[in-house]
Image (tube, rainbow, N blue to C red; front, side):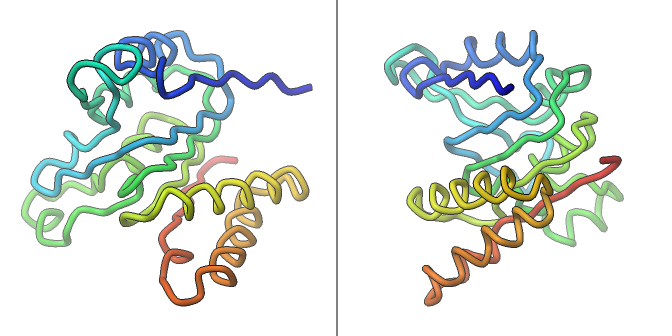
Length: 177
């Protein structure tokens, strides 16, 4: 048995999503929206939400340091960052300079204790993200294996987007499964 809870874009405000994640009992969280990566301070990388319903007000960032606190004691087992740069790493120079191994949103989700997360390393078109997500979840239902679902969804993108490197953007990080 599976329960699906969807928050449409028109209702996905900063406060609403934050409240949902504070009381999070969802095993899978799929974020489809805009992400950003701050190369100078990866801890400030995050997800974007509107201030008020119906896409009104300013766009407000939910930085990874807040998202990580919300996820730390949640039941989330898998977080899909279906947004640009959700899996982007900080430049090697930043890592050498600071001595930190923090890379951005994907790393922050994993460090919060979520066992598995998937994100894109660079920008991509919405249609490509959609095609990958559909193929990923179809394969996850068929095989019940995150690695295999990721691999097979990448194959779908490689076949349909053969003229781009979009298929190479998704990255899966999994631990303690």
